[in-house]
Image (cartoon, rainbow, N blue to C red):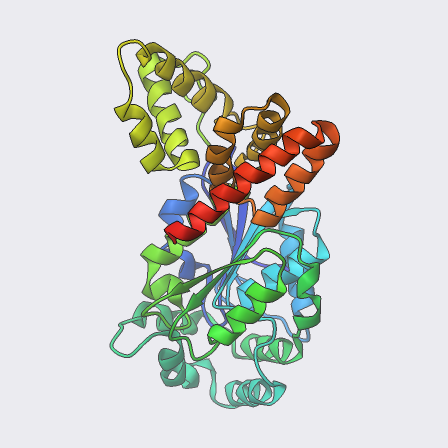
Length: 387
């Protein structure tokens, strides 16, 4: 099975694979493409008989996952999809867990309802064509009053038999029992008014996949990425940036701070410092700068937050793990609370932070870990109190 695909974005960027929803083409990702392709190399594909992909039949979602893997030469990549595209992403994460660094499932499900309605839809399409579904799909894809005609026009580029075969594949799809096997950090995006994959489907994914995050988009139906592109794109960027770091152009002066003009390195370091530590913390630190500390703060911003934190060799999750361990080992408890917050912001869970501190009890000493647990517990309590 060969799938038509298109690649956009910087040649040196990490790969992000995106799958469409049933009845659409790779163009359904157009609202997200400018933001994503500026930082990732985005590979979008068409389903069989959709867009530029040749017609096919008699396949399963596992077969589609295999066809997607055939498109990818990279050892590791991120993957996402809308509806059936999200389900294919889950199947890829199950088939090749060592390769998938991050997963995004938009308006998707572990099981898209009972088989009967899917088989009925397949029969209708074979008899009357895909276009006969347009009125019903408009009501599922978008809330009342939203003009999504450009997406509905994509139905004209869909082969009837291939669409029916996709329906039959969805009738057989059920990964509810396998959700705990998905190891990739996962974001589940749900349209709050989606009748096709309601919030209960999203909750099944978010509670079944270990550590998964859920973002519910108000005022959106099944194609939330189209109807509400701003919040959906923002949620994807937050998740992907912490689990699959984006490409940072080397430019004239190379990666990170090495060789950059001081002003450029300072600006890049300050941006990273705010993203990791939070704007409020950085604002307080900047407000406290004096003539005596100004040079030191400038040094930290350029050297630590640009030359080190912005290096491409490790993602921010890994750097947070190392930083927590180093602070405990050296007894720098006054910095630990700040970096517990940073670790959460960089995608670590509370359970993962606990595991780091348990590890330090063995290699840094029980007294150091005891102090670290006390600091971390106070910090987490403060976060809970802040809401």
